[in-house]
Length: 72
Image (cartoon, helix red, strand yellow):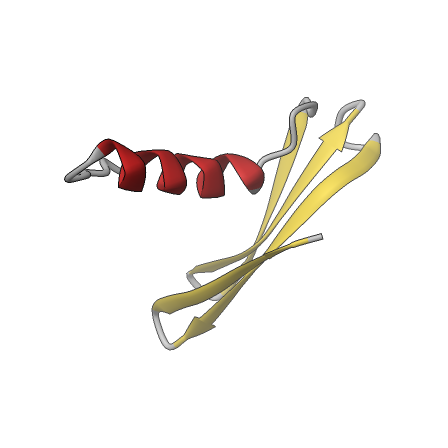
């Protein structure tokens, strides 16, 4: 579990908005894909493993450092 420490409510609210915008409101299945030890993809579906894709996240790395997350 990641713990976020914020120095003011504005920063906390902005961070929470960003995190919440990456996760769809409706899903009941999450599939994960890896390249080596790095998590590189997250797929959210509604209707189980064979259901409808509602969103995907693509994670990009340089070495072990996470550089970006793209939502489609």
